[in-house]
Length: 215
Image (tube, rainbow, N blue to C red; front, side, top):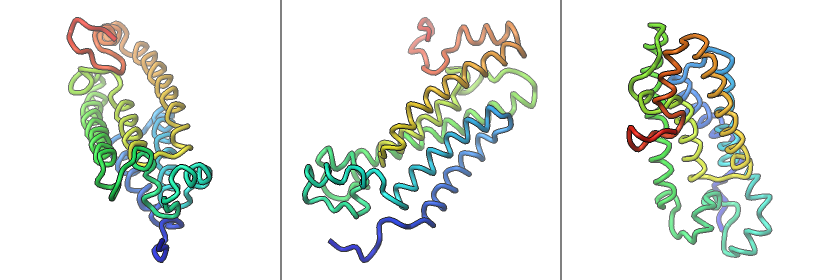
């Protein structure tokens, strides 16, 4: 085991990676209202918690060290690769960065950012014109931006699961659901029957497989 190159304690990388992903998401979401900031803030907290364990202090590895050492006696707990727990538990060999779970995580994260960008483009012009956003991703679901945040977080869980982010994920799902319902109430107050008709034909989170299917 060679620890000449430390895998943790790299707080500059924690700051750098957190800043990149948070600012990238911010550039698309551009929070304005208190609700927007709560949504974005919860996402940012997830990202910071993730990279703090990925490069700062491996809390999950520390808490599970006894079990991991018993189940996987050859595992170097202080190595960066040990943090890829899905690869370890599913018997992955070789560099986990080239494993199926890691590649899948990039695809899911990429899809999330693409959806976030597409949704923001539609919403931006709709808000400027004071009209409903009903085209692009909004033609399929009522809250594509929340779905995008969930996809990004889920992608990171596929790549680097931690106890904290695994706990935060379902909490954030509930939070986004409540925010979505609250947002819909505001839309009804502002757009009235127009939004009610839109909500009736457009699922909240899960796109219908056909026009005849409802949420």
